[in-house]
Image (tube, rainbow, N blue to C red; front, side, top):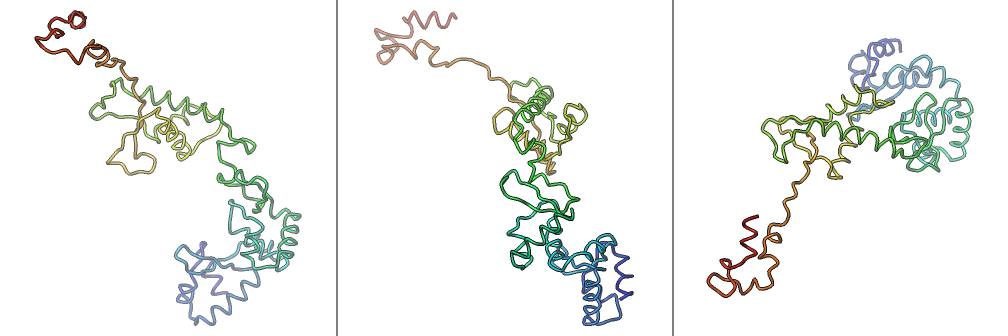
Length: 289
């Protein structure tokens, strides 16, 4: 077993079991026998790699001591909750993943919570239901709503304040081009806007590029800004530049402004006729104007 723990000590992220077996002078049956003993002693823990392979890694001493003091059903529930990280998990899902009877799950959850090992949190999507996660984790943005929520309520005033600042920045960086895009024009990208908000110290909290993009996309959806695709840039944040939409020039309706557009005898008007453009006093005045 020492060979296994020494090898795992060199690989902090763990090793797939096939690779572990290949690295030792043992057959798979021997390796699995030793791993079972190490798992029972809470010296190693199982994990699944992104490619689906099952592996093992050394368990940290603090974690090992914590699990040694748990009863078997508490340990199973604890491991299920631990796996979800800061996303939290419903009681129903704990039961399904642990394959334990509901009464045993309830007992384990109650004991772990009383010991301060796990805690309950709420989701903005379903505030009446409890989620469980390890006490040392902070709930993720998908539970709290991120920067846009204060005390589980959407902070619309905060959002509008930032939107105003972003729109002002984009406006200042937009050229006076009357709607015609100048050649080689350079307008703000998400990275530019994110840097502006960070450097300006306007906000008490720091927004992520994704959060800034959500706000700019909202401005775009509301028709307050245009976005220009950067063909040469496929970066997630900087695929587009943004500029404000120029104010339209009010030139009126040319047809209605023309006297012909409101003339009641327009259908009789023709060159050389009793009603004609040559003799129309209104057309003469319109041309002079």
